[in-house]
Image (cartoon, rainbow, N blue to C red; front, side, top):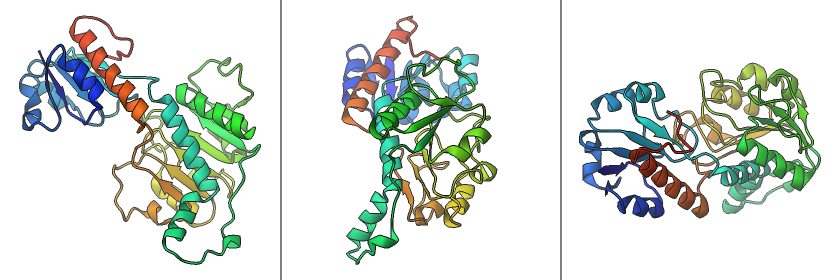
Length: 310
């Protein structure tokens, strides 16, 4: 049995897989020929398209580290009888922490001040005032595991007023968390000081936050995106921030990754960007790698892992 690990994984999961199968790692020249004899794949961001599955001669299972599945053609997997697993919940704490960090970095201009300090120039601090977060209104789009943690963090640390929007969860979601439930984005957006996005990229969510919806927000508001690039229209966001109609934004994800150094958003002082690193903690990577490997092995043995989606 051969398992190909196509992206860099924490070694905990690789070593677990090696106990039961021959493992070909991402840094092995043989990895590019996985279509020939892979029984299972472990992937993170590697794209597995329909044509890959059509070429794969023995592939039975794909185990994806993380929650997002936009790099895997699920319809093709189902058509070829290939099981797909993911690792939900493992990175929730790390991503929630990053969402909070990005929000605070933007509103208190932390990254902007860091750039200025490194440039060794004199900073006229009165010209760069930020905003406090105490009792501000935070809008959470996507009330799943990560969105829930983010809401609790803003509420616990800053006594924030929470508004949730998610048409796919029941009315009693967050019954233990003081909040308001918005019936639409149009209802939510004019109220929020911080908009935090926690939803998958789908045809419905692509360009969900567009020019028209950004125009509904306060000039002092910010947008935080740690979910997927493409949910926010980046050109519209640039126009909103550069024209002073929005204060700033913090993104861990972009429509094209990695973004180029001349990406328009990178020229904005009140924009903070990180390289899709929200799950990048030692603890999360170790847990995710172990779970990706264990689910792959379980599925190859004929079981049905909890993270199975196809």
